[in-house]
Length: 339
Image (cartoon, rainbow, N blue to C red):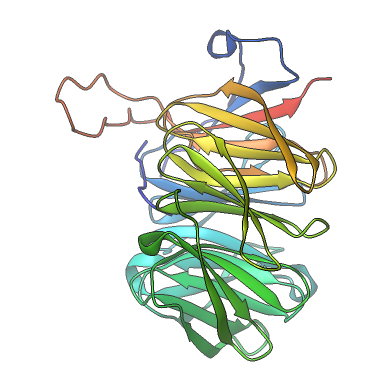
């Protein structure tokens, strides 16, 4: 994703009930607890698989129990790690290693590294498209996508997007939609031909990062830098509406059961929660206080809980300088609907 913040090596297990930070309105979503991971290092995406959280952290992936933060394993050698994707039917996981232009393949049962796959430059977001049965990386410095066959573990296609990709989502029917950060667009990609079909403008929104999709209503949800979330019709690229969100969004999630859209806003330290009342009717229901730096997000589709990584930060007195994270404060916030 965009900016990777800092608190890896030491892991502590502490689960803290969350109370002080959520002094706000009486809406239904609350921060249930904090999973204390510890260690030092930057972070980006995290992902849920069965009972585990896979968390990008420096040059490794921390695997922890999603319920209590207990350490399960460390997957090392993932230099510049960004994201994690899973292919359960092959019992394989895939990790994007941005600084070494590769993807790490690992065994889902043992978390042991199996192989490395060379990709385009700076693979960032990574996903598994169940329709095409392919792993796809957003290669930020190559302005394109790498399409990987998870069986042969080879790149079978590269797709030039004409701009820097941030996040990709699938319609589960052969189409892919990709946020183009530096052009404020969404690219529509045909995975049957590996061709770009359209570039759709997100204006007046700028610099999109997080992206989610409701396959039933065919609505895309793009979180953008200028405090806007854009709802776009995926059938024609027309903007349905824009909604206000917090500052520093770097992740968007959609819960198909509750019909809620979540924008994680790291600079403001909150989540904007938007209700999809119908395909063309959206309303901001809640701005939940989280913590500074909690900018990426993962939704557990089994429990409908939300996970956000962050850390505690030193007081920064230098104007314009990014705050420094405090060692051993790396953590994951757990959010759920308490109603």
